Image (cartoon, rainbow, N blue to C red; front, top):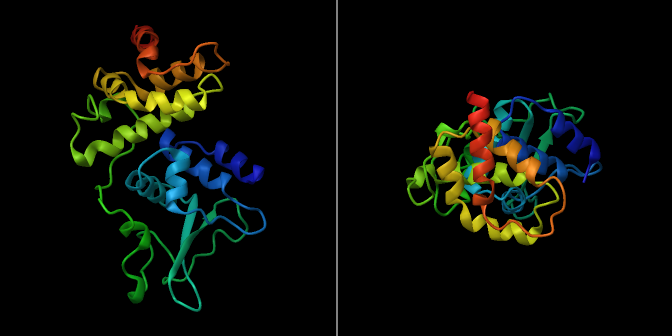
Length: 232
C-alpha cells in the first residue's frame, strides 16, 4: 500500500464513483519500490464488480490519462504475466511504452500479442457499458436488465458500497448484496445516484451501529425524501 498513491487517487476529480473506486484500489495495490501489478481477479474482488465492468473502468482511466498499462512476458517461457499498471503520479509516467507492450486505442499492438489478455480473460464477455452517473442510466432490477446492461447495476452497487462508512460491517456488506434489485428500483424511479443515493448512504453509515443493515431498502425512505427536497 502507498499512501502517496491513494492520496493522489482521492484528489482526482470528474470521475464516476465506480471508476474512481477502481483507481483507488489500483493505488492501494501500488508498492513504492516495485510498482503496481495486481491481477484482474484481485482488482475485481477489491472493487466488488465484475471483470467486464472492471475492464471498462480501466479503459476510462487510461483514456483520461490517469493510468497506463503494460503487458509483460516471462523471459524464459514467453507466457503472459500480470499487467504492470503505471499511475499518473509516478516519475516517467508521461513516457509512452513501446507499441508491443501497451494498452489503449492510441497504441498499435504487437502482431504477436494482438489479442489483449485484458480483453480475453472473461469466459462470458459482456459488451462495454456506460458508467452510471445518474439514475436514468439503469434499469429497474437486475432480473429486468438485459445481459449487456447487467454490469451497470454492478457498478452502481459498487459505488454504493464504496460510499458506506464504518456503520456497514463486513457481515452487513455480504448480506446487503443479496438485495441489489432495490438499487435498480431507485434508479428506475428517477433517483440520482450521486445527488440522492450516495449522500444518504454515506450519512446513514458514518458511525458504528447497534443493529446491522442487511438490505438496501433501509435507505429508500431517506433517499426519496432527499430527492423531493432537491427537486423542490
